[in-house]
Length: 363
Image 1 (tube, rainbow, N blue to C red):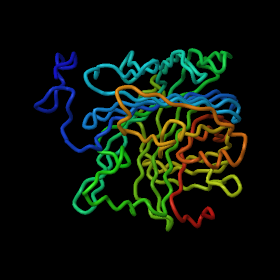
Image 2: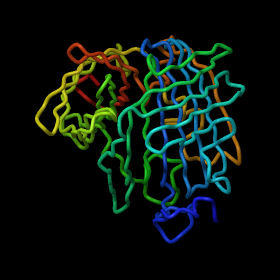
Image 3: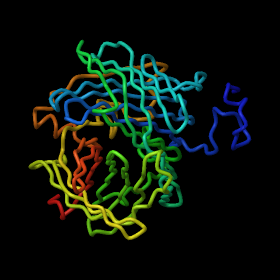
Image 4: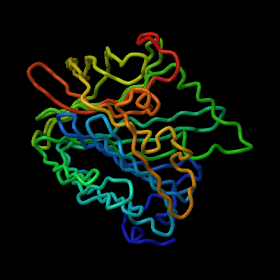
């Protein structure tokens, strides 16, 4: 099917742009952005998933206010023929300037949240090391990702109250990934499923920290015995600084969790860079975004990439001040944190998920 993208000179395969190189149903392109203030009053997460081999596009917008109430909206639609826009009903993601500026919009809807925001990258986007995993002869993961730190401006409206977002007191981070991704849609039938024991007894830790003139992000997969299965990240500088990003080659972590819970509370990391330098950051939780509200790990019968019909929406409001509710919706969370590095104060998020036994932290 021809679209406007087929006029451009960036084809990579012998096909039109509504197709990808692989016929695997798990092929996914993901977009995610987190925006939060520096006090912990409000955190917002939004994102899209595109699944060309399932003919599905889905997305979400979630807002947590004072770590007491979280509002969620999930949406899905048929991908073709409208492949040109990341747009599902009132939710949209628009690239204004590649690798620099993104417009994030959620129009009026029945779930009580709306926003119009502009993400502006303050530091260059950085490409992570690609991940490839195979089991029983089948590839279940073949992805690459870029991450970027920045600021945001605009507004967020929750239950009729408007929060003004400015670049001085708000921070933002985003990523963009693509390739074959596990855990997408309903499992195939009549085919031996991949053995995901690779992820058993493992900590998944995706981390961002942003200071005035520099920042850091990394993605760490660590087994319970301390074996590092994957690490990719970098110390990055602002656009005004022409020094190259420095890869992170080791992470020494000491995290603290809420009682009887996998939800993060505080901690410390020491990062070793490729040039031998070490950076120590202390961590304090400000608030949390529970990404289950956006469908991560699945919620209320919805999973990313599953066919929900030509157009579908769902959502709800959670009282996450109730510890039982918070523990129930805990999964892959964006824990918004204040960081201290010497005299500097920075902000960012930690996504921390422990699967199975992990004795270091009492799991």
